[in-house]
Image (cartoon, rainbow, N blue to C red; front, side, top):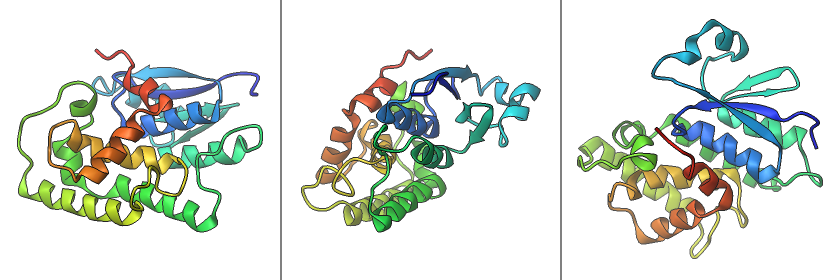
Length: 211
């Protein structure tokens, strides 16, 4: 086990989907860590000290033994390599192809589906739902999300690749942007996301105190 806990910088309201992804990775792997909170609305991430520490001045940023790393999927991949089995649990599939697909899913969720991300921000998941209907662009993005998720997820499966991986959490959160706001979601995908949401590491984030 690390002698000194790692430090994870997150947004003070615990709404960042990317900070959540790394937070879940750390808890799943059983790595001791502490959180530092930044008020993004007050631009604390743009203060000189943090900009010197975080290359991209965003959250999450992980600090480990003097090494600082930002961008969530890069952090999770780093943790998987440094804190490897058998001492630590894995958060990526063991199959090379499944691992590549999991990384593809993560990259896609971070770079596409912008209308959903704009109209169903994670504050509507963790703090206050919205009753504003989805726009035509967001409905089109939702259809794409459902198509890809259904293609990835085997029938009656609880996980994308046979057992849990961090891509399951990321995909579940994208679906929860719609589920939490009572938008229409295919039942199979709703069941999958709801089951993923009950994972203890995820619930530990969900239950955080928020202003």
